[in-house]
Amino acid sequence: AMAAWMARVEADGALAGLIFRLLNGGDLLRTDVEAAQALTASAGTSAQPAQVTGAYDLLLTHAA
Image 1 (tube, rainbow, N blue to C red):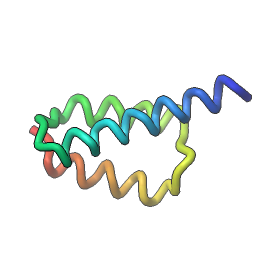
Image 2 (cartoon, rainbow, N blue to C red):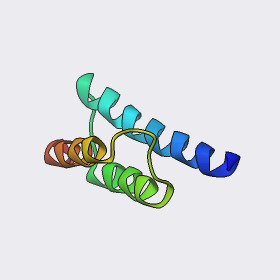
Image 3 (cartoon, helix red, strand yellow):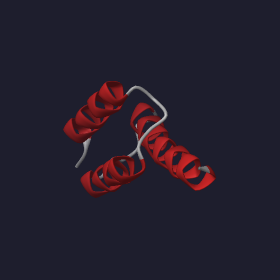
Image 4 (cartoon, helix red, strand yellow):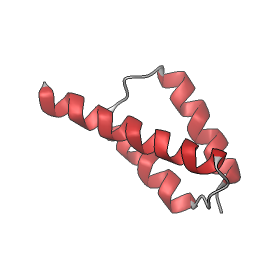
């Protein structure tokens, strides 16, 4: 149970980091977004899944 929770925390942290990078004008690479998205797909999320999906969709539109 603890390992699954830690995996979700890692996945949510990866998404938060990408959002932070975008909001602060940093470069956003498609490969980084896809890697974080794959992490979320395998680990799950502690957030609302529909909102997480929407966030990744938005990030991909801004990724190079």
